[in-house]
Structures are given as structure tokens and as C-alpha cells.
Image (tube, rainbow, N blue to C red):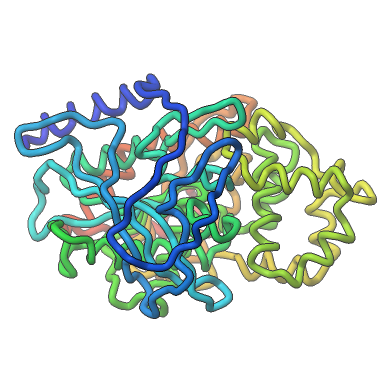
Length: 451
């Protein structure tokens, strides 16, 4: 497929996605799997949405990370018939084995998409693992379900698969894509461990391993691998680049894009409190408690009835639900003594230590990395993302840093979201250049004059 046709195809799918071409009510879907594993049969319903049986993990998991547990065809909602097959590609729903931050086996879901477009670069077709931005904590919010239902709603929940845009643009370039749902988002056996750097990094790296095992694809062990993520996804890809050498030495990274990464959760926690996306504070707390049950007595001691109810409510919400239900909420209304969550964390060594353990930037990343942050971003604060680039530069990493200069529009959410769109073309071009083997030069030397 010529490059101009690929770009037109990408533009068409982009327009369709942005206009909400398909608005589907989520309904029960019984998934047939390829495996014969023993799976919990209890029906899981999240805010009126019956989660397909495919997402119920088996009682016994494989021992090797990245091993496929089951697959099934995944219908892409935004697709067209083409001469060489369905455009933009053929999708497969995945469940694969990973290891969580406690060293325990965990099942993770996601999707692999084999593109219809040819790869125009030299060498074998590359693979990009897409780490989604914040989607929520309810299983119905997962990125793999968003590929099937880009805009999904009922009377209790609204889910928007906004990551489909970047996915389709990569497919239009002839790049194979694997998307992770992260630990506990989609898979019904546990709560999503939102912004847990180890869980997210492992899920991303094991998604690459799983994609290599999908039958009938053009991806091989020789395929160059890239990572793409913004916001929560930027933190996940940044953490994956740091942990690749120790956790997945078999996954060589040609390049990693980390947009607006929440590298310092202490800073991010302060910023999101009272913002439009204040609900993300509840997702963070829920994730912390899922990862470290020893923190639960502290939560019991500091959260009042309203705070406990909010965490329970948010545990099944998607982003749009949280915006409507908890936009501009302040955590001072959730605590027994009226302190903010940030103040409680600062005064509680166990909580402070946990957040410090989530810091990204303490290890040198593998391969070239591109760090992008909006100078007006006050939701995932610009300063802490810039500091990540500085930390990596100090370790001798190959860093391309870009500060997106846009005016503040008075909305923390829009200040954070705007660079995702304005920088996306440059981000994809940078990543596809790395996948094609084109060299890059670190601009760490410019950091003293970079905003």
C-alpha cells in the first residue's frame, strides 16, 4: 500500500473515531477461547456491563512470563474491507501470563493487530507495544474492549477508546501493534493496580512476548520492538524501558516514547487532587491497597465513610464516569481529620515509602527514549516529567526531550490532553524512524535551556 494511501486511511479512521462513528451499548458477549483451561464461571458485571467470559482468568497459570493463555478473534469496530484483507488489520484478543510487583503470577489481557498495510522500512515488520493512557478502573474500560466498542455507554457508565487513534495510525504505517490492558483492567480476578510501575512495565514487556506467539502473523523474534505511551501509558513505557534489561532481556527495544509520564507520584497526587480528574486519586489509592494490603489499616484509619464510599464507587468507573461523578472533588472531604491525602502521605512513613518506591528515573533505560511534556501541564506536572529526562540524562541514557509549548487554557485536563494530540505525529514519526534503524542523537546537552 503506497504511503499516501496509508496516510489517507489513517486520516479517515481518525475522523471516524473523533466523530464517534460507532456508539454501541455494551452487552453480554460470551467469548469462545482456544484453550481448554479451567476458568472461574462466575458472571462478572461492572456498572451494568457483563464482562465477556474471555476475561475470567483460569485457576492455574503458566510458569513462563509472556505465555499465551488464550486467544480469540477480536472484531474491530472501525474497519473496512480491502483487496488484501480487512483494513486496517486483523485483531486477536489475548490473555497472557505476567508477574506482578509482589512476584506472583497474574493473567493480563490485551489485543494484537496484524496490519494490512506493508511495512515500508527495511527489515522485518516491526512491533509496537501500546500502553494505554488512563481509562479507568472498571473492567469494561479496558483498551481491548475499546477496540471493539470505541464509544460504549449505558445508563451507568461511559467508556471511550481514545487510544484507538494512535493504534490505527501505527497500523497505517505497516507496524504491528500489541495493546496491554494492564494488570486487573479487563481481567476480572483483581482490581487494576493503577500506576504501579512494576505491574505496568511487566504487562507491557510480556505483551511483546505474547504477540510473538500469536499464530499466523508476520512478527518474529527478529522484529524491531518499540514502546508507545502517554500519561499513564507514558509512565508504563518509561518503567518498561528501565526494567527491560533485568526483566525481559529477550525484548530488545529500538525506541520508547514516554509522553507526559507520571514519574513522581508524590507530585502527581498533589496535582490531581481537586482537578477535573480527581477520581484518579481514588484509582491510585485503590491500586496501592491492591498491591500492598499492609496499607489497608492506614486507609481504614484516615478515610471517613465518604472516602471509603468514593473508593468503592470509583473502582468500577471509567474516565468519563469519574469526570461526571468526582470532577473537582477534594480529598479533604474523604478524610477523618480534613487533611488532604497528600498531607497524610507526607506524614506517614509507610505511605511515603510506597510512593517513593514507584519513582521512575532511578534506573537507566534501555535503548533510545523520547520524553515529551507540555509546559502548561498541571495535571501530570511538567516539572516532574522534565526531571525524569534530567535523571535519565545524568545516567548516560540516549534521551530526546521535547517540551510542548502551549498556553494554559485554565483546565488541567485540557492542558494535559492537548500535547497528546499536537505531538502525536512527531511521536509516531520518531518511533517509526527508530524501528527502521535510523539513528538518533541525544539532546541532553540542551537541557539547561529547555523549558
